[in-house]
Image 1 (tube, rainbow, N blue to C red):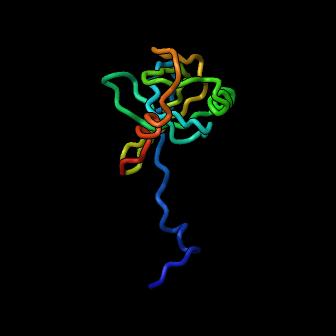
Image 2 (cartoon, rainbow, N blue to C red):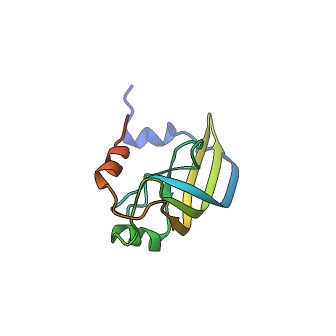
Image 3 (cartoon, rainbow, N blue to C red):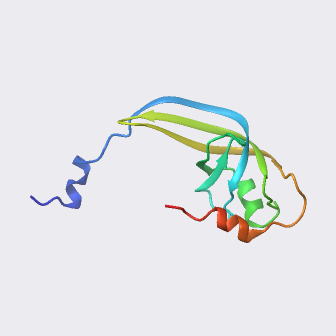
Length: 126
């Protein structure tokens, strides 16, 4: 039996059922900023004991400020943001997060950012 591209639609998984869909305002530690202003693959945590997660960022004004270097980055930089969290269930529970709006950027230290240090933290470890 040969499966063609045309047959793929019959083998795709359902997206699942949405369990929760919430927007909340929270502080996030920026683990891996996308200095090129990309929306995807930002990494955050919810503090020292918080789990690290990836999220997309939809705030165009914030992304533009990142891309132009208007916002400087240092270890420990945090943001206050409106974050949408959607949990869905198919076979497993999946959580997707989207930063809708960045309301503030907070840096514990003033000064230049070690871009090489940020790049090292952002290397895919898989």
